[in-house]
Image (tube, rainbow, N blue to C red; front, side):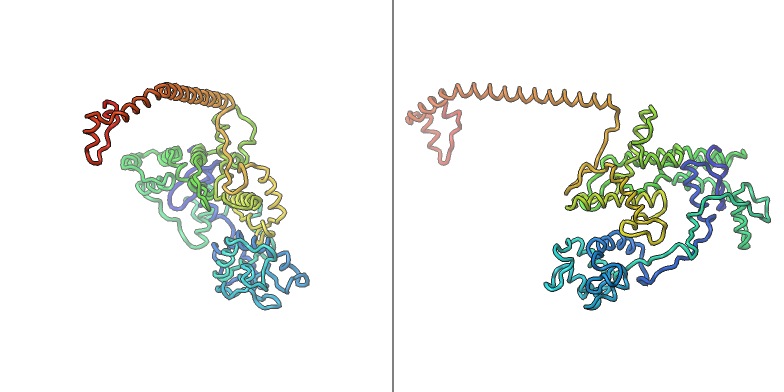
Length: 491
């Protein structure tokens, strides 16, 4: 087998190469091999905060409070205006000298909402310009949820987290049933089973085996002919050949590439406000599928998506195009195109890119550090804005305005671009000649008809001066009749 040592049923994982085939299939083994995580130490907070509520708070509510309220209502008590602190949930519920400002679950009774809507002339916050309607609506929704406030937590009592430990090569654990072991990785699985007084599941029969492998690797059922051929094949390498065939199938990349597209927030439209179509999004989708089917090295896969247009040239036009397409990773995703504030629009796009980068490549919620040092991971706010400076120098959008437009770049070389430009110039010249001929022809026809106009007028005058014409009298005698122009001229 070219890409994996072996891969069999019964829950046994595989030894894998360094490419995407290995990365995809290693996911199942990682969770079993990882050491247990220390229970986090949480600060007092909302009794239960769902993942959706936490994300809404960190992306919408905390940035809003930080921008509009923290300058007067955060930090040391001596510096608080009105004795009100809004950078902790305890301070929010305790309120200031005038009492609590939030009644969880009841925005109508919460003086915070009355202040930000300027409904009370004596209590208008923030001073000066009041919040936008969307910001007020977000605060109202948050208070109605119960003002959930995610707890601050640490990685563990010793300040270390297993995910930050460098990789190491562990010693192979001893096992009782050495006959079951076919690969060093099997020892870890078997040792875990034996420690729990469990035995490995029996190997599946060949019909079950080919169905499991085919569904797992391609998402499709095997055909009847494929099943029968595998069942009748007595060769010891039959299973290895089956796996190689499935890994070489285009369906493999389509099946496993979907997982990457999910975390990279792939979609065919922008979503959010205007929901415009990303007409070329499919190019990035196909790039991901190709990368999986080619078993592209994971480091190259990452480099191409973050900086494919900056990598050294290779002289291969197809590969150069692929690198540019890969950077679509940064352009996809929800972006508020109709934002009135261009500065906020740009910062929100940077935040979305940083947040996606953290989740896809690092498994971290880096977006939290937009407003504060990360509560869970060793990622300070200064690192967030250092990274934001890099993305700010990357041109994702053509402009930042109400109805902003994203940037698209040609996928052809300079010579092909010049040929296209020349064709467009020739087309424009042909259209100009067409319009000129059309105007000249129209002018010619009008000039000829204008020269005949006196004769038309004379004929009409003669007709009107001869009312005794028998034909004309007969036509006009009909009640409500309108004589055709041909009859009038004939008369």
